[in-house]
Image (cartoon, rainbow, N blue to C red; front, side, top):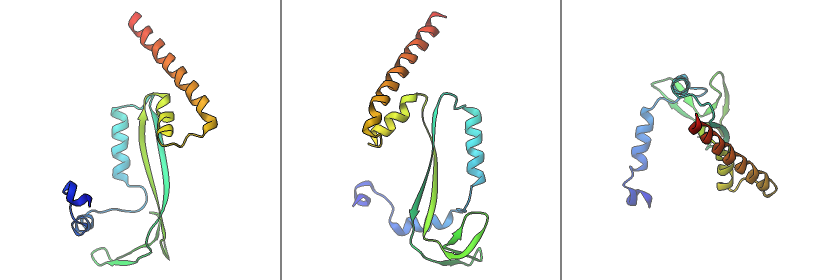
Length: 143
């Protein structure tokens, strides 16, 4: 349905394009180098950063890639492989939420993940953060 509304490529086109991309298991050095470059050019001092890991079930399916002489679909952590077909994948994500303490709290609230008993504490922290920001902006103006 969305394909018609948003003019998206077909599933077969996406699969063809994905076959062209080299995706390896384990930590991708190119991504780590790009993150290192980004961080060194824009320090994350004062930012709230989140690292999220999630496990997802995947369809157990083996396929042979002749161009790499490789069987895909086996358990592989990037350093070693087993002869067992993989049924799960671990994915990770790094994201910068904001420079504010309340950004993390707001993210939890918006996702409805903040327990009810923690909401009073979250509101208190938000007020403290607002006061801190007010004092910091006042001291910068007076200098």
